[in-house]
Image 1 (tube, rainbow, N blue to C red):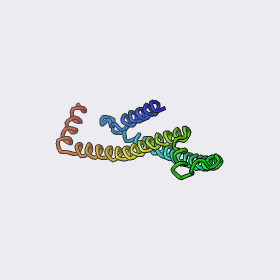
Image 2 (cartoon, rainbow, N blue to C red):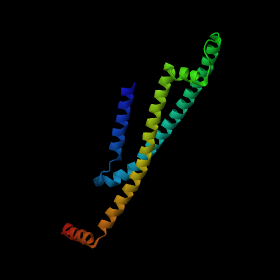
Image 3 (cartoon, one colour):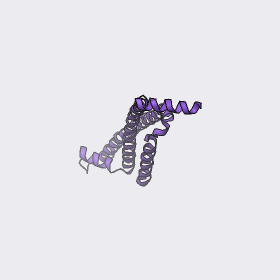
Image 4 (cartoon, one colour):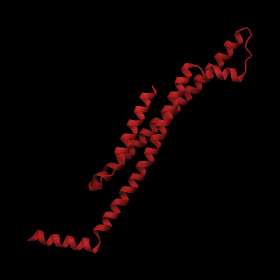
Length: 158
């Protein structure tokens, strides 16, 4: 499961990296796609956060039920075992199902964190796109650029 989870996380990183790149030669297209990308990654983050929270509650409920069951079972064992919080906690944390749920919770938490960072990165990407546009416009309004456009118009007419 860990190798599969690691691969999913690597794939997620690669996809985010590709989508964050800005092709300055296609700035209009980049601007038009930005809001869709931001919305996609924001929604992905919200869904993963919800999945993480649900898994956390499920894991906590499982641990609580397992604690009760363990305590009951220990009391039924003719009192040969001294029941302490540590004994119960040890039984819970060594339970294979609990360990599996905890691993899944950790993986979901990691993915949620990555998506949270991705969402912020796409917000910053929007700011970068706007700055690139501003710089390109200011470059177009320099006296040299204006003169170059006028010369190009003169040659086009002839």
